[in-house]
Length: 279
Image (cartoon, rainbow, N blue to C red; front, side):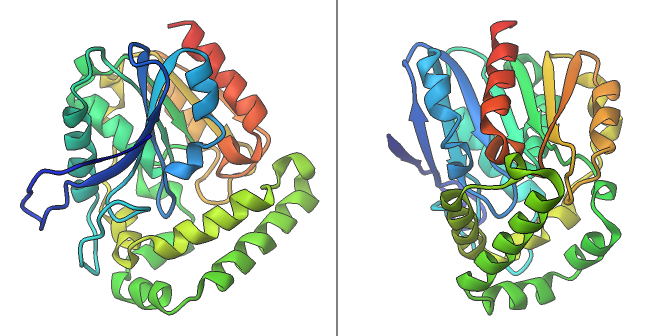
């Protein structure tokens, strides 16, 4: 089921949001949040299993992504996307505190929301979560500090080039770790499409996130942290450190890179459902 929500906002109606939902209407709500340059299709393999287990899953396209609005700006800010996300949650008028599940930058948004609204969050599931800029390799940190250059590169790069780079990375990962780490062809195709349809200015977002480390002790709700042991986007050592910093967290490394929910979906889904059963 597809939905849209609209409310006039200060940044030229940025508060429209495209999302899907599935599962029994009275089921425990779970909100699924994708990362940078992705879309709600990140969760195509998880949503049916959540619905079959009687959860009510919602997945949105963040501001500047997928089919949600893309304000004309060469330098998006994390706070814009967070406000878009938080107002969407308010618009759902949920009768139960939701479980928040986020990947990478989506994990950042979930943690930021939980810091501000701890009483309204049942639990957190964080997948390869981004919570401070230092998790990125130095080369990426420097690249994200040049928003104008990023815009020009993204605007003039055809979709086939994104697909070629994704396929090349996929082959290299498979050679080093085995077939279980590779992404199926439909996922690679969707990933390339999502990169190309992301607003170019959104690639400035990582440069505007704030370090959440000082706030982690306030996140006392049950938390599951999952990550790929061969993550090339964020430092894998940062995830066990996050588990130790959170008061009520458990963590698990899966075989895979930055997107274990797509490269290793059977194990990922099993771990998520097992965690949900303990709540």
